[in-house]
Image (cartoon, rainbow, N blue to C red; front, side):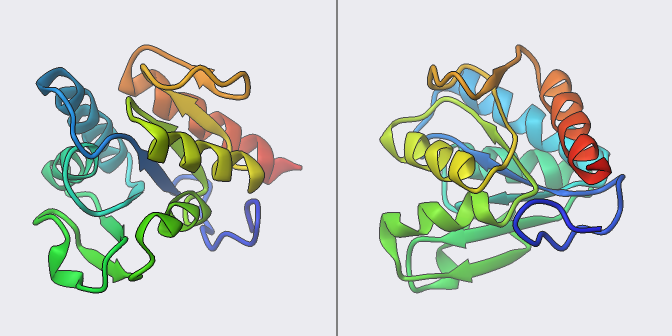
Length: 166
């Protein structure tokens, strides 16, 4: 079963979820990102992110705490630049242009607090037709805004399952 844009997920129970958010975040934002990663990992979903610090590190840390898998799509040429919680580091050497690749490689996207880079990733996610759920993120009409990591993952699972039935 393929999902949007030729995704390779084959089970209705697991998916790749791209997490986007700021590279510099507050402690509260880090706690939310860690909880999102933990929730995804506990449900067997793979985290896809930009692979560096801030939101990316926090979500990977949470996923690893729940024995989840993580993929980091790095803006730099050195895979060694990935945060310590990334299982598979993909070096691109593309700088911010890699923002197109992060949502492309997920079946769905969770957008957290962030700046213009996060906003560009939201735009790409919507261009690619990915469902996007947000917690304290940019005000974009196509994003389903929720309050908790559990609500975010529940909403994405419903959206992806609905797509698979089409």
